[in-house]
Length: 222
Image 1 (cartoon, rainbow, N blue to C red):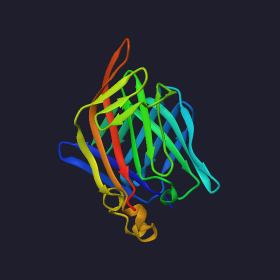
Image 2: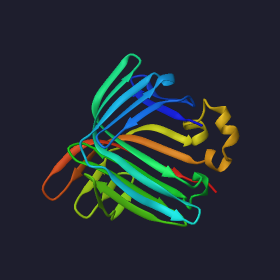
Image 3: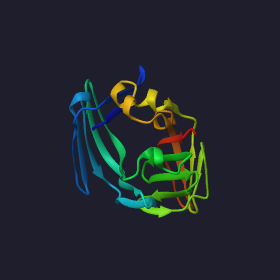
């Protein structure tokens, strides 16, 4: 089964389009190209920061590996009546455990792109872990909130932003795919997602970098 989704924001608001049609992805260490024919979208990502891979969770049933393919990249996107160029990000999550079986209650996740590239994960539940990756190198997270990410050598301050998605996954990602809603467990469909786009500023001992942040909080309901 295939699932692809495109989220766009323009003067008419925020729109999510999803499809279970086939798509094409070609990737190597430096370039990623994606073609989503059914959704009329294609793009090219060219890496400007080194990749980073981390085993986030593992038990006897399987594992979850987070592969931050491009913490920072130059991106060229094409969509119907629209073409975009700018800084971007690419990741791949590999799961050998059903997502509804993960020991997870709340996930805070996000990324910041500018002259520096930052991504972070805060996993809370029966199993807990938190970490950040700055310019391809792992660093610890000292504190995390909706408006601030604190690391030993830098702090990201996040301005109030625009809501991109808010609500259960059944209504945010899968509203146009009733077949998937019939086969996926209700515990996954009821997962609450809140995603924002905001301006942000990373301040370190010797420099300051302003850019854009995509960040979210996900709640697994009992």
